[in-house]
Image (cartoon, helix red, strand yellow):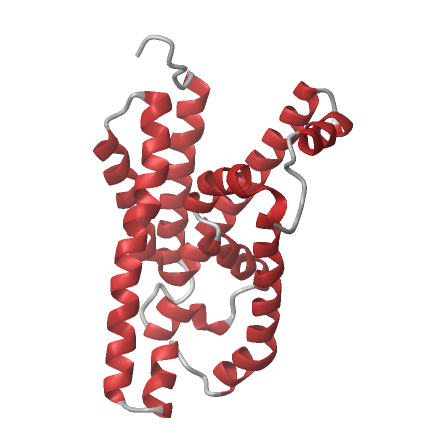
Length: 228
C-alpha cells in the first residue's frame, strides 16, 4: 500500500454517517405515517410525496455511482461531445412528462407492467417484468461494484466487505421504509453527490489557475468541440 493515499478519520466518519443516516431514514419511515401497512403506502407513499424528493431520487437513480465515476472517463475520451447526452436526456424526459406520464397517472397505476396487461395481455406483463428484473439485477451488480472498487482503492478495505456493507444498508432501508425511505435517502445522497462534485470542480479550477486557464487548456488539448 506504499504511496497509496488512504482515508483519514474524518473520511471514515463521513462514510459511516452516510450509511447510518440512510438506515435511520428507513426506520423513521417504518414507524411513522401508515407504517407501511398497505401496498399503496409501501410502493407509492400514498401518492402524497413532495415533488422535491421525487425529483432528486429520480436524478440519483439515473445518475448512479457508475455515472459519477464513469462520466469523467467518457468526457476524457469523447471530449465535450458528451454534452449531447444531456441534450437528448432533456428531450426524452420532456416527451415522457408531456405524453406518457399523464396517461400513467389517469389510470392510477402502481407500475408500468399493469399498463402492459391492460394494453396487451398478462403474458406481456410477465415478460416485461422478467426482462426488467434481469436487467436491474445485472445493473445493480455494476452499481455496487463500481463505488466499491473506488473505496477499496483509497481505504484498503476488502472489496466484498464494501459491497456487502453498502448493499445491506440499501436493502435494509428500502425494505423497512418502503418508497418514502428510498426517496429521502436518495435526497440525502443527491445533496452529497452534488456538493461533492461542486467542491471538486471549484477546487480543481482554483488549482489550475482559474476558469480562463481551464478553457485555454481545453482548447489547446482539442477537448472543446461538439461535432466529430
